[in-house]
Amino acid sequence: MDSTLYYANKISESKSSDALKKAYQFFKKDMATSLRIGRKDRVVSDLLYISRIEFKTGFYNESESSSVKALSILNELEESDYNKGVRKVLYNHLGQIYKEKKIYSEAIKMYNEALVLTEKSIDSLVIYNNISNILKSQKQFKEAEKLLLQAVEMFDQVKDTLERARVLDNLGLIQLKLGKKEESLSYLMQALSLKTKTKSNSSLYASYKNLALYFSSEKDSVKAHNYALKAYNLATVINSISYKLDAGKRLIELGDYSEAKKFVYLNDSLNTLTKLSENKYALLKYDVSNMELKSQKEKTKKQQYRFIALIIFLLGTFLFFVLKAQHKKDKVLQVYKTETRISKKVHDEVANDIYQVMTKLQGKMDINEDVLDDLEDIYDKTRDISKESSAVNMEENFEDGITDLLLSYKSNTVNVLTKGIATIEWQSLSAIKKIAIYRVLQELMTNMKKHSQASIVVLVFKNVNNKISINYKDNGVGCTLKKYNGLQNTENRMETINGTITFDSSTNNGFKVNLII
Image (cartoon, rainbow, N blue to C red; front, top):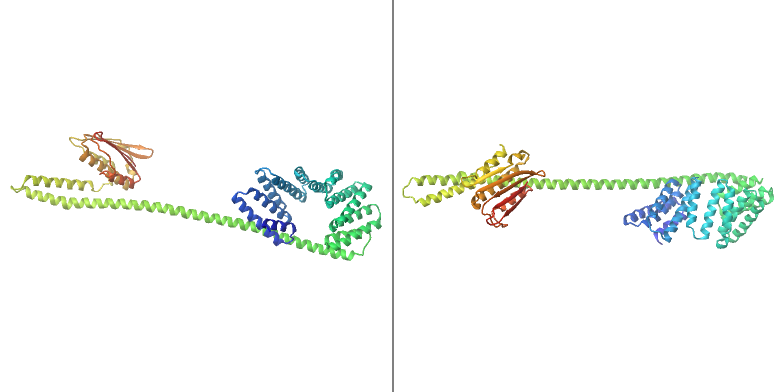
């Protein structure tokens, strides 16, 4: 058997609070799954079953909420015969809810909504009976009679004997209230005849009870007692305490005290059963509420775990990038320190030694001048290497350091012009960025001195979108740009500080470079 059908039957048949609890858990779980996969039709069905359980356990407000929510979702779905049938059931169920809550106007409204969607005559008959019971409880007997007479006119279309008998029995009782004794007895007897054919004891009990009321109103105590006794005996067969208590009360009112002692016992038993039933459903209400609370707690706990996992992930990501940046910074500083150390070693040892050899040789007459020139050339190159890799002084004014660097390449044949250098907030830059900028400009100027044959060099410094832009341009011979040339080192340095460098040059068309830091 399908699980849905199994638990649906549990709602209708079971009197066990444990069975209802399991059914409730099943439909709650199924609804969560249906929501996740987008099966709105299943969600509507689950809500209807949940509403029925809530109604059966006395959760009328919750039952109303579940049914209204189901109708709201149903309005989002395409109209079909199946959805139309579900809508009718929901309206009918809401009618029952409002009847129990004694909101009779809303109950009748819901039953009428169900009636509009009803296509089968037997369903209309049931709804007419439901509405007439509400009207009867409001003592609107004429309105109830009119409705039930309409139901009687539909009998040719309804084969269900028991439903027709219920309409007739209800109509006979209402006409008794209206004082229409003849019509009342006729309908009550017709109902009894139909019920006898169905052999439905519970329905027969209602007929015997109503006929006892009728003959009591007619002061026919013999017949009244006869039907009251039949009702009591049938209640005994059915073994319903509430039926026996009701029938026993009617016998006592008719002067038959033979069942008086049993009446007291039955009354006590009924009170005990009522308390047990109340306790049973109270416990079920607690279980259902507890399940909701537990589910909410578990949901909250899962959300907390997800939040903690997200925080750990974000912290981990943050630490990864911080450590990565720190590693990059340490690597750049290590390179800078290595360059500085080599520069000092070249200057202190190699350059000085060459200079001393040159000094000694200059005093000897037989030394070839070409050798001295070669030594001087080696000395100059060594000194340049030392200078290019010497320490960058960032303790003093960095702007002056950059200016001095650029102007040091100025000569009788090369004019170096700068613009906007004072507009840059150099003090806001980190040491790593200062070193990179200094080295890149140094390498560009050295490249110009060695290869470009330029007579004019222009460097423009600007602030653009919270970044520093440095444009280099010379009027030299230019070159054909290749990926692996002497300027590759400048790209590496800019990459370490997340900056960019772009080159623009061609033969005999000068050399242009743009730095963005």
